Every structure is written in structure tokens, then in C-alpha cells.
Image 1 (cartoon, rainbow, N blue to C red):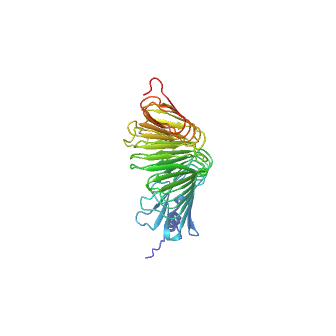
Image 2: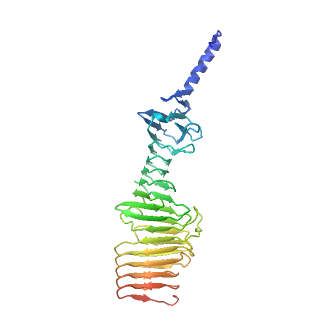
Image 3: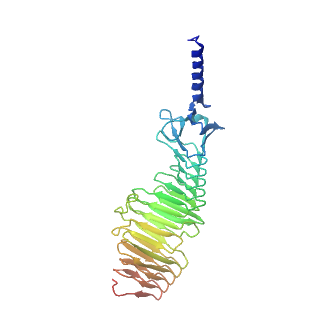
Length: 388
């Protein structure tokens, strides 16, 4: 039905309203509306690639599927729950997000279903938070102190310059993490079940392996590894990390994050030395233990004197292992194996199991009731007043 407007002033008003309405609604190549309110953030499809470009300010960008139609992907500028751009997923096979400058938050919101298209994120300059989804993702933090969580899928992260953190949670994939410049951290959260975790070196790369799931984190140029074991009986081995950039390993045996009271389960921590001459010091009290003298300091938190065990293997070489500053309430039992070579071993103030191995060894059990296996060679056991 056509309506003729004979009033010139009314005709002009309708014309202006029509122009405003047209400007407020842009149409993507797929015929799905995108709201023009987000003029400072650009999102478009080019050559089967969905490209999202942020601003020089602090952006919040969220990608999610439409709640009623999983074939539509929405870009939420401001992460306020409102779609500012919508795209037909049949029109693209890849997603690229460039947040540019600013302290940006970029996240994949999979509340309405997984987003599986291969995705790349570039945080740019600034302290960025980038939270991936289920797809195989490439994440570049850029300059600044960034926080990156690849989430599910086997992701590749380039942390960039700055003091950056990469987080892993149960259900995530096996990721490759390049720490690059700055002091960087791998934050690995375990589960409430029993886990086996091995930390080792592969040349100059740091390998974090976890069962169940056969998860392998392949890491380079990263200085700190944090493992929150949470509940369950866990077995953790820290092998010789010489050659990697890792200088500190933090092991939290608590049932929760930040509780500091343990999990009531028997956890086993093993620290391996090198084939050379090591000078290892074991000290601690009240559930906190540090093993120093190796390429990486191993710090244990929330250990339980009633449940948890620590083993230190000095391996080859003429080693010194000194646990004289380890209090009886730090851990249930300490086991030390000097390995081959002429070793000097001093136990802690609790009950220890001390093995000299081959070579001419000197063993001092220190306080409490200890067990010593002297091994081959001309060995000496030292007892002092106050010892067990």
C-alpha cells in the first residue's frame, strides 16, 4: 500500500527517519544485519576469512554463536551480551582477530555452542587477556604483560615481550607455548583425581606431561612453571631441567587454590639432579619445602606431614645433599639417593631413607629414626647426640 504525503514538512521528516534507519542497519555479504553502533571496531568477511579489528583503546571483544541459530556467529563489542556484528558461518572458514593497542579482553564465549573455525588472535601492545575456545588457535600476545588461556584444542601461543602467563585447565589440549621476552609463567591446574605429572627437558625446550589425557605442553623461553595438583593422590617428577629457561617450579598440593591445607591424599614428589657434581639443599617447615641448588628451584606448598613424600635423586657425580634444615613437620618422609660417586648426604629432622649408592659416601641421618643404605665403597655413617 502506498501512502501519499501531501504535507512537505511531514514528507521531510519521514525522509530523515528513513535515512537514519538505513544508516543504523548494515547488511553483511550473508544478508545478516550488523549494527552500526560499533563503528570504531571493524568486522567483515574477506576471502572466506572473518576479520575483526579493534581500536587503539582498551577493547572488549567476545565471539559467540547466536542462541537461536548456531549457523550465525556474533561479535560482541564491549562484551555486554549484545551482538554488534553477525555473520553467516557458511561464508567463512577462518577467523582473525587483531585487538591492536590497549589493554584488551578477547574471549571466545561458547555458552551457545563451540566455535570450531581455526582462529588467530593478536593482542598487540598492552596488557591483554586472551581466552580461546575449542578450535585450534594461534595466539600472539604482543608487547605487554598478557594472560593467555587457549582452552580446548591444541593451540600455539607466542607470548611476546612482557611478563606473561599461559593457563591450562582440565579438558584443554596439548599446546605449544613460546614465552619469548620477559619473565613468563605456565600455570597448569590439575584435577581432583589422581594425576601423574612429569617435567623434563628436551634440548632447550621444557616439556610438561600429564596423565590422564596424555597432555604434552611443549614450552620454550619460559621461566616459571606452576602446578596446582588439587585433590587426589598425585605423582610428580621434576627431572633435570638444565638447558631450559625454567628457573622455578612451584608445586601446590592443596585441594583448592590458595587454601594451603593439603588434600588429605598421599602425594609423591621426586626431584632429579644431574649426572655431574650437584650441591642440593632441602629445607622447609610446616608443609612448605624448597629444593635448591639445581638449575630450577622446586618449591612445594601445602604438603602434609601425615601423607606426602619427597624423593631426591642426585644421580651421578660427587654430590652433596643437605637436608639438615628440613623440619619434621614439613613432609612425611624424605628419601635421598646419592647415586654413583663420592657423596655427602645429611638427612632432615624427621625420619629419612638415605642411600649412598656406589662410591665412598658419608651419610648423617640427623634427628629422628632413619634408614641408611650405604652401598658399594668405603662409606661412613655419622651419628651425633640428639640423633635417632
